[in-house]
Every structure is written in C-alpha cells, then in structure tokens.
Length: 118
Image 1 (tube, rainbow, N blue to C red):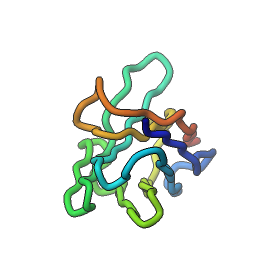
Image 2 (spheres, one colour; image 1 turned 135 degrees about the vertical axis):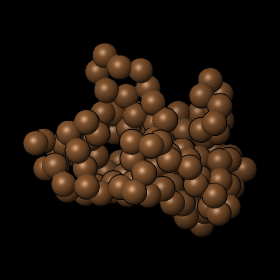
Image 3 (cartoon, rainbow, N blue to C red; image 1 turned 60 degrees about the vertical axis):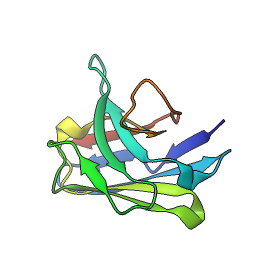
C-alpha cells in the first residue's frame, strides 16, 4: 500500500501564495503518476493538476492554468503544488493522490485545508 500525507495549507489573502507538499511512502514513488484534487463543502471533488512519473509531463484544470504549478522531487518522494494569485473560489480541502487520471483507483492523502479570504 501507499501512504500519502499533505501539508502546507492555511489561510491567505486573495492574491497571495501557498505551496502544498505531499510526501509518499510504502511503494516505489516513481511507479506512479501523481496529482492533486480539491473539494469545497457541498461540491464534488474536482481535478486540479497532475504530473507524470518522471516529471516531464503536466496537466492542469482550466480554472488554475497560469496560476498553479505542480512539480515533484523523486529523490524526496514528494510532490508539490505551488499556488499563486489565489482567489476565494480556490478555498477547499486539497488532496494528493496516485494515478490522478483514474479517480476511482489509486491512493489518497488525508487532505489539507486552504482558505482564501477576500
């Protein structure tokens, strides 16, 4: 099994920045594509960003393109989400997961709260 733990969430003013981290353990990190999802109260979980096993390919939801950047450091078994120009509508619990293109498969972290005030 794979265990994932996220950290770096918090409260930030609109226009500010946060960097989320997700540390993985349990199986070979480089075996997995990795990604981020988010979920706001009363809304469905939605895709945010994904990165390939070697880090050479990335994919983003239209709502975050140009503002968020996903990256990974395989030597540290960690994936990151740099979030710039944050908006109140970015407020959600952010989750990292393996195999982000297969929402009903893979492993999920416990989530970290991001709150953006206006």
